[in-house]
Image 1 (tube, helix red, strand yellow):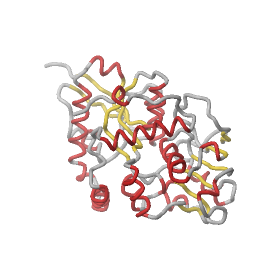
Image 2 (cartoon, rainbow, N blue to C red):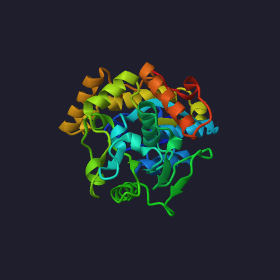
Image 3 (cartoon, rainbow, N blue to C red):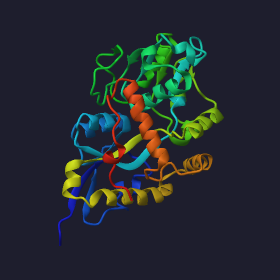
Length: 326
């Protein structure tokens, strides 16, 4: 009996991954060893970029930065988390009424280099003309990976709170007027389009703190007009694995497609309905795991935003980064 090649994976405890996690879906000839410790996304991304696992889910923005700095990594077109980031921008009603008032003000985030923050700053730039350098920056959490000196001065908490504990620090500072705006993680997918999710109640722990943008139709229209539906997390694979097993990336993509196709059995009814509503509004499935024109447009925008924000120096050729197309 031939020995199977063991591949280690760091994945989220997500319905679209569950069939791989529980072994319902596999890849012939390979043993998929999923790490059973489902830590917070920030910690998981940090671990992958610092050498753990052969395959890992990682912050899309951090992955582009790491590849620009010659990290031996590639991307697989499997996107677990997508969705507009407007609802992730918070304010306190007492201190801010319109985005234009953010210019010159103190703006907070949980990580300067986080994908959600990159997208939120990109939205403020394109939709409201607010540059990264127009605001003063405060960061409450620990960075995953930043490869360049930043173009803005960043004030930080030392030591930072543990991964997952950064939101409430920002909520308190917004409520007390120390910050005028802040970006926090959360509210992906249909919750990003239609509201709900766990983040608004958490941020409301302190008086007056709420999303700055809450108009469903305005958010939907912006995504449709720009053709940019933010990609948050992406699957990545180490180059050495691809070199040893060139057949594996495409097989891995197919396995995740199979896991996606049975994911509803791991979802409550309201989650199934939410994703269906998202597909209906967009007129496409944002989790089809392909590199279509919208995906390319979206990733180019993320690269452009990171250049504007001082996180990257160059535009990367996407065709060289993504492998495993089926």
